[in-house]
Length: 258
Image 1 (cartoon, rainbow, N blue to C red):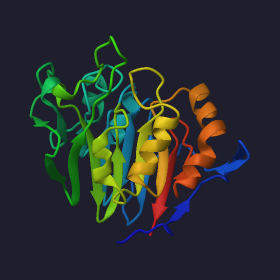
Image 2 (image 1 turned 90 degrees about the vertical axis):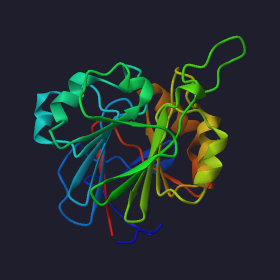
Image 3 (image 1 turned 135 degrees about the vertical axis):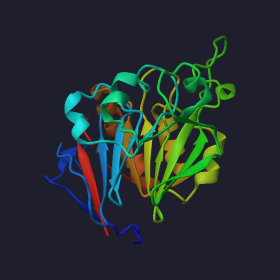
Image 4 (image 1 turned 45 degrees about the vertical axis):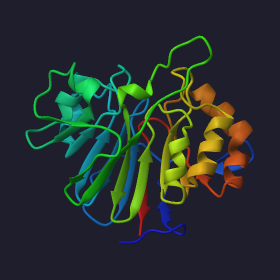
């Protein structure tokens, strides 16, 4: 299975016009794939559920109710220890005895979960047929302040390689120099819009997109006001980077078909 920029995007409802530009707004339907399609389900905050190759991978899931036990995880990937990214009660709902749970060492140190994998930037492992690579995740602090995501903590972002179709989840990262290593290697970039947490905001997000050069950009970690402002101000700038912005509502999903 090989995806390209001409990958067909199946949307359940039609795009709407936002800030004089057509932006895709898929439905909230969540289904398990059992074919060659790849489904990206945005949960809440930075939470994402990826379904492909008959597998289900969660990244930073929080605030899921008990109904998600019907959508068990083959893997749960945690970027860092902040409460809006790491929530044991949610992991307990979706995890089974076979679930791979990966997290940085600073999270392992506080976790009560058993049989977790401790990871650091540049580590990689397989979830079935899917290759997962840990990448860098940290933020820069304004002068006079400490970083809320210090590089010394070895927090991680994740690169999910599904038979050559690559999804990058940045966690809470700033626009960091290491993104140059990802240039032209990412199909979908999931990047935070903030606010707060010293994550990327505004033009920093555009600059990260211009550095990574993904085919598609899906915002995560946003408030509706921040996202609307970003679309109004920067949508054309994102498009000028050769990237298509896909506007998913929380608990919305989008399916990529070969």
